Image (cartoon, rainbow, N blue to C red; front, side, top):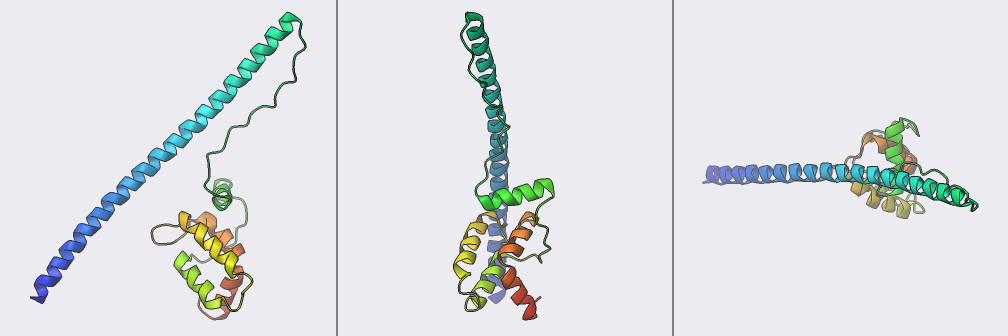
Length: 174
């Protein structure tokens, strides 16, 4: 009886795992489609900016041929950056792209681990708790399924949660 129960449970879990894998593949496909659409949009924005410059130059040429004073040219339009969801992501993306920026080495922590540290040491840093919780809330959108953040966020975790990380080290929890 127990063996049948365990076998049924194992089969149910295997089906759930397959469903989750299918859902993950679909999400990854959608993410790739979205990234491609964002790149295409950025390319179109550049093309529109170039067309605007060409129209402005043509208008200036017509005005010049007609003897009218030409208006001052508009400054060149820089290629737009792809949209980024928040300032946190923008800084992390820039750090990953350039390989520059704060380079603090931080042990890989998951958001649940950071949340536990905030809860455990809230009484030690009451003036920082609200700030930490806001960062945790916004970082959820950039964490993996397992709650871990990409390498580009290491400096941010070190900068924002440095007091907690030092406290963690002092407590011997490394």
